[in-house]
Image (tube, rainbow, N blue to C red; front, side, top):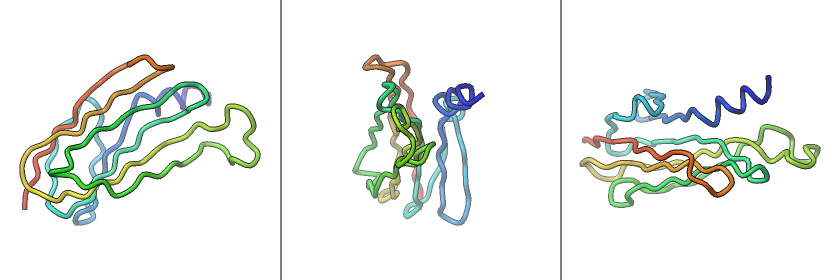
Length: 125
């Protein structure tokens, strides 16, 4: 059961907008949305370094200002033991300009690209 849940988290990602307390969660099939200047965009993806599961994210700094990233572990790191480093990484960006851009995501497994996709953004006032 845990493996199935972990696989689901690996295949699904989430983007949230917190401009006016609006939240929008999208996946690869719903990769177009609109955000306002000043909104915070978050992207969460699965990472499990010891197994080789990870992702890379690329965002245009002309439109999106990187704020921070946070790792949330599935297990307590003091007691997890070997292989207990799996969890979710959330990246935070602030919309700083109007226009159209994209966030590019590349998912990897043991150094091999498993999938790439773009999240298209329309950024307004």
